[in-house]
Length: 238
Ligand SMILES: Nc1ncnc2c1ncn2[C@@H]1O[C@H](COP(=O)(O)OP(=O)(O)OP(=O)(O)O)[C@@H](O)[C@H]1O
Ligand SMILES: [Mg+2]
Image 1 (tube, rainbow, N blue to C red):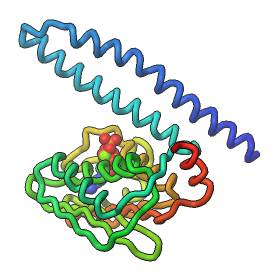
Image 2: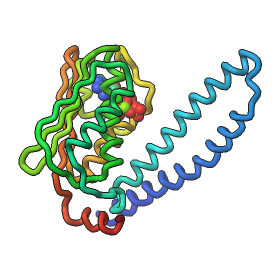
Image 3: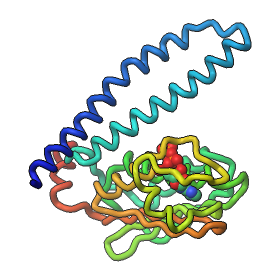
Image 4: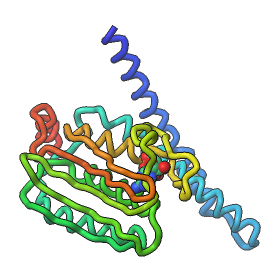
């Protein structure tokens, strides 16, 4: 029974991965043709802008699907030793380019962490981007980092609209978005599923504290050292 489930799961994952890669070719071809179009008339320019926007969205969606399909594979992570304080500073600079907000960095602790720098950056940028999307210009958004008991905690706190308790588990599911919010995101709803997959690949987890009207705090909790089997993949990747 377990084997059959595993097989079904593997074939679904392979299908998503293959379909994702196949979709990249038509996207590239459409992009090439859009680039060649003459946008002299305003109507054509307007149509091109819409098509371009949707094509960008499709491209992001395909990349996100491929990323999720890959996330369970042993070579998903490329582990390296990361200086936590330096990493947080770099991330904080990237956050500031996302939107005009009152960004604050709260550093508590230092040391090193063994993790995949790019995947970790991607996960935290997803959280920072979400915070920006659910707040107004000049609102406070905090990026925090704390080291305690062989764990590092990265948190992103906003004072935005918050998330109803009934939605707090659901939003981590693929394609899940909170309905009827003031600011509906333009994304596909894969962001938090990816953050969770990246946390779990590091044997970590994601925590959420949120209250409607008061804001949300998403915390990524990771072990400072990844477990043994992941280290194998890491050495192989180096
Ligand atoms: N900081 C936040 N404040 C309020 N709601 C949030 C916040 N972060 C996420 N959400 C809710 O959770 C939903 C899922 O978030 P997720 O990042 O997975 O998808 P998305 O942002 O809609 O799209 P994508 O990230 O794929 O571009 C969002 O649509 C939004 O309703
Ligand atoms: Mg998102």
